[in-house]
Length: 212
Image: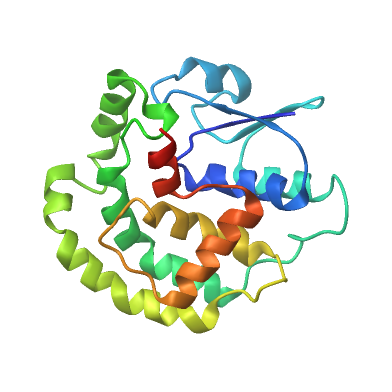
């Protein structure tokens, strides 16, 4: 079983989490960000993650999560995420994107190992959420804007020992923020993020940087 991903991609992290938390062995294949031909040949569009197994190819992160959940053991991800978690993500995702996106195309992530791949991402993503240099210049304001959202997340955090769809949706957002050193998470949020990284086997940005 193979999972084709971009390491930085939160949707890909969802699929990686499901496999890791269910203890299912898989081969992770990171595609260069400017490689359009490979994913198109698999599912007809440039989109990852893609699960490749005996049944063929499957895209869409939550479809992959559902398939993985049915493979072995008790179902972990059958119930929808709590509305509070979905609401928190909907409210704060825009600020997170403006902090994370301009920092993303770095060679620490294997999908950006080439200058062409980094330029491809930059050219496409500077349309939304905006020019990277301008977003970087707004860092202090964006960090201040996000701070009350992170504080509000503390009472919403999933409880230890109860893996669910809440984790599948929330952890990828917090993992993405690990590329922004200016963001200080509340202790409870940082502990949750670090615990999920360990349980799912998905390193945070600083660990990737140190290993590169």
